[in-house]
Length: 321
Image (cartoon, rainbow, N blue to C red; front, side, top):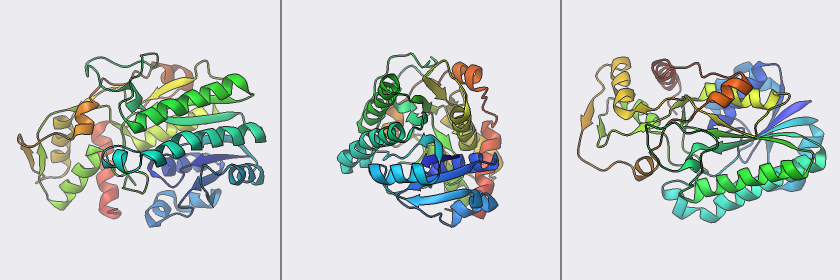
């Protein structure tokens, strides 16, 4: 049997492939790219031999059904999406709905028809909208999606849970907060990167960073995010349907930048002037509460900010993607 990962050649997806393959799993990656690029091969190394790479659209029902049958898939991690944030919200709203909502419906239908019960749906903390950054956000907090991307995530979550109520499916929704780390890069489905993405590249290039407004975020190292996803895919029975996946603590931008200054001597941070990025300003929120994931998945994020930034800088020195 094997685990299928949609969006498997994307940022988070590649780390999920690696974590699954490292456990000895047979893994199937479905993505529009299909094959690995050089940086993906570097991340997976010899583990790539345990992964079958399939080029397909998540909106193609028969292609998904064929893949589930051919590879004897018994669990699905569904992460394929168009992250329609920033400029992409105006450029690709229809494509985002078609892939994020329609693709989720297609994955769920393929799972239903082929008898695959566990579907782990990768949602986003953006569905909570903005809020008090001092107040942790539990899974039962009312959601307030602001924009095409979180709206599609809300709709896809509802589809997954309804399929679970109607059919012999066992869906799990993971709301992921601000992953960062190796292999984050712009793609056709994602153009707005994390703030850490830009800061780390500037630090290594000797370029200054301007911090007009000291916001904060619940940054989560991507390998920790992938570990939670793998645990959710393997858990025999879960008492809840929705789980937050995050570090569980907001970090101020100034704190992250000061840590980078220690790790990359000579890095210059300029304060004041300019406007904060609208997305990060408008989506300022509290950290995600992760007690459910600790209790039911046995998961605790292990990578602190300094350790994560050091690992990311080391990766970028070797693979400046």
